[in-house]
Length: 113
Length: 111
Image 1 (cartoon, rainbow over the protein chains, first blue to last red):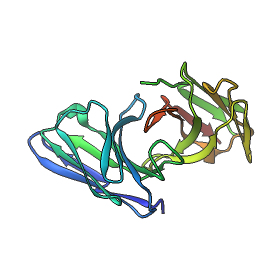
Image 2: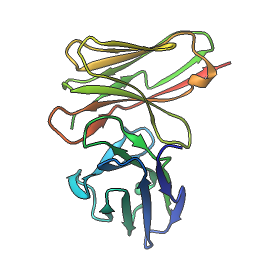
Image 3: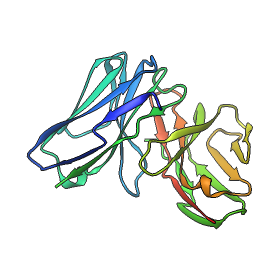
Image 4: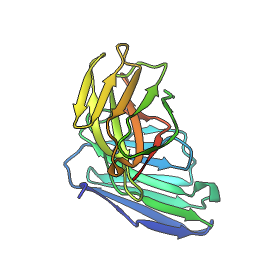
């Protein structure tokens, strides 16, 4: 058990759908992250939250909308995605931003048709 | 963006052989981490190195942080099939809020 759980593990959606990815951490960490992992590309940081406040937004298109209602939960709302958005979306947490170890969830494999 | 280049990108070796993976950057990091990712799972931390020149050993794995804290290497002795996976280095920015990940090395150990 990693302490970080992501749901769903797999998601297939059309370009006009609206869906959400969920992440929950049971480690008492203050920082949570969304990463995108595509084939042949480094892990791309999308968003960073510290104590429910967004501290980084790496030029991510507005069709991705994060939400952090509390320090244990992180969502990624998806709307009118493109096929090139198909990837593995990884959630991670750490004690504080940019410090310590990143604990990753198992990821949500997203396919956009 | 602080780019971390890993080499080689792909590596396929026989069980029992030794190998080294490199992680290079032009940026200085406060610390550097190595992760291993298996198919269908998220990356899992192997080690964190903090001091320039530091060497850490984890059973058959040896990690080194460059003196200038810009690069690192991972050496595996007598590779086993269980070592198969994607190896990722990640640098912690000295001033920022994030970890920068390398391009990854996909290792396959053939029995």
